[in-house]
Image (cartoon, rainbow, N blue to C red; front, side):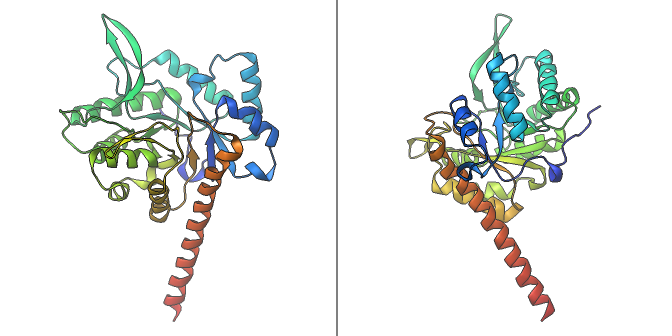
Length: 306
């Protein structure tokens, strides 16, 4: 049976984080403990990129494991795929997490595998699951199986998508909430994906935010995207975060309290000094939200005592 190792309120991570890319490794190591990067409180890796890596990469990862809390965000589990879960891979992930004492593992609420002539293959993209009752039960069962193997609750990330499945029976929000409830898993909240989908499918992202089960949030992502047209955004993680996405994160902090938030940058990666402007903005928004909460609490107490 699953042993839930991660308590949301006692997680090893806090503050602002940064996705760890190979080109950033020497920059972070050279600036470690210097004020310029002091707001990096944790880093995120994809286990697929590090399991069975060579000796140089393992030495680098050992350094980061000793220097920063690490979270793992998977790429290829394909929770919505038609083929059985890759059990051998999950056991590799479990060994990896345990070796590096990593509590948090998350995956996308999507699928990335298909089959042709009896052979399974990876699609190199994260595709949306149809929002149906059948899919809720199917995906939730696979998440529970994953949690039982890993011995921990995992987080699932709300995914971006560009075409709505014609067989969908419910909204994205209702589907997400149903899967979270039936699987009893955590939520890896992607702020940019909410915004991207809101433009692509014409809904209010702030209303969507108010419908999520905030008690399940383990941490969040924020990122930039590419604007293909006025009504089509592509979740590239290759641009700066835009103001409406920052506003959505600020709204989330005001609604739910501050939670750990990580900057994703997967392409067009600038120098670390440039990226730190956005990491620092995350930290600033967190500090401002805490201050607003303190002020509101003080004012409420004053009102009660007058």
